[in-house]
Structure formats: structure tokens, C-alpha cells
Image (tube, rainbow, N blue to C red; front, top):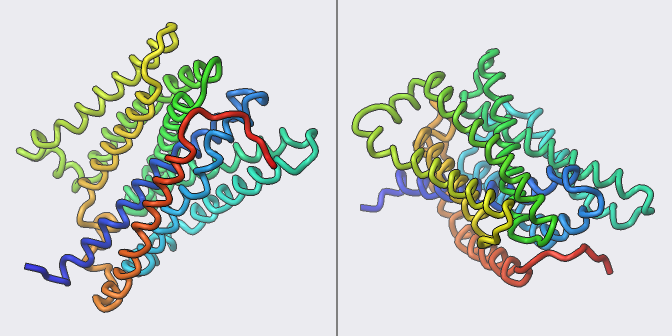
Length: 333
């Protein structure tokens, strides 16, 4: 039976989760490419930016959608989250703005200053990824103000940054050729190791600091039902690591494997987080039903979402379809 009081908040929470997931996956790889700029050499920077040029601006649409849904559908949670993480959100916005400015201005300045704008593009990417990881850690800790919560948030910042570097390098393996592709494979392998180490540490620490997460993952039979998530994560990481090793040894496996594996790891991690905290939109503080706005507002906004979301999906798919294939050196006309 359709119960609006139950299903409308659930639908909006699901839509917001979808927007956050797609943002982390799509904008994750172009943030990751930005992180790798200093490690790939100045001569390759144009190719790196060409690999994300048609996509990176549109990828951020999903972040706007997620924040918009949070503001409109869950205003109480929006006020709490933004209030607790005002400084981190400011750093994130500075990083994203800096990336956009650097991407455009590097093509317009004298050649002597291009290196400076490349460095600022990297800095913007680093600020964005570290702030996102820090905010995730704060969110998981329920915005607790303690040394342990701060340490966990800083660890989360490093883990998210390494994850973005991993998926960014996997994207370069998919989009680039020759020596740059081999170098990207090497960076991808190293970032994968760092990311999995971080995931292991966070997976151990998170249940220890949150009794709710511990009960969800280790109570019988939940532990048996959920066992495939860590097992699949380990198997996927091994598969990608092996593929990258074969590539570095001179073989030429399918170029899509590292990125597909990265997407699978992101998906499994997101499922784990979503299960850990559902139905809370703010862990252990506000559920999706407690924080929702009036049902009349949700009905009205749902009409707009039904129109806007398919449009976003269609132009996203079309942009990837049109600009599919190997990246070439960036050219400005």
C-alpha cells in the first residue's frame, strides 16, 4: 500500500544517495586525474586534461543535484550538516573553483605561466578530495568533537584522496596509450594498494567507534549475509592488481578492466556505507522521516525531479558516447 509519509522521504533519500554515488564515481576520476598531474610530467599534462575535458564540468552536476535534494527534501539535516562542516565545505568550494579557473586560464596565459596554473589545478583537486574525505569522516563519526573523531576524519581524507587517485589512474589507462598508459598503470597499482590499506583500517575502526555499525555488521545472520561485500571487494582488488601487473610486464589486456574494477570497488564501498547508516540521514541523530520537509513540498519537487533527472542522465550518457575513445593532446580553438 502506498503510504506517502513513508515512501516520499524514502524516494528522495534514494535519489540523493544515487546523486552522491554517481558524483563520487564520475567526478572522482577527473579529480583523480588532477591529483596525478605532477606525477605524469609537464609534457603529458595536455593529454591528461584532454581525457577529462569533455566530462569534468558536467560531472559536477550530480553534486549540485545531491545538495539541492538535501536542502529541499531534508532541510533539518541540511542545516545540521552544513553548520557542522562549514569550513570544510568552504575548502571544497575553493578547490572546485580553483580547478575550473586553472583549467581555463592555463590555455590563455603566456607559456611561461602554464606550469603555475597546472600546479593550481593540482592544488584545487587536492583541496577538493581532502575536504570530501574529511567531511565523510565527520559524517561517519556523527560530527563528534573529539581527538579520535578528528583523527578518523583525517584518515578518511587520506583514504578518499587515494581512492580518487586510483580511479583517476584507471581512467588514464582506459583513455591513454603508449608510455603514458604504462605510467598510469604503475600509478594505479600503487594507489590501489594505498586505498585498500585505508579501506581495511577504516573498516576495522568504524565498527569499534560506532556500536550501531558493529551491531549491523557482526550480528548473526547479518554477518553471513554481508560477507560477500568484503569478499567481492578483495577479489576485485586482486583482479585489478593482477591486470595492472600483467600490463606492466608487457601484456596488453583489455584497457577497460582497471576502470571497471575501480567502479566496482566504489559501488561495493557505497553499498556498505549505505547499509551501515540507513535509515539515518545524519548518523544516530536524524532519520530520513524525521528530517523530511512537508509532504506537499515533496510532491511538488518530485515533479521537477522526474523531468530533470532523465535529462541529466541523457546528456551525461551522450557526452560519454560522443567523446569516447583515446584522448589526444588538448587543443584550443
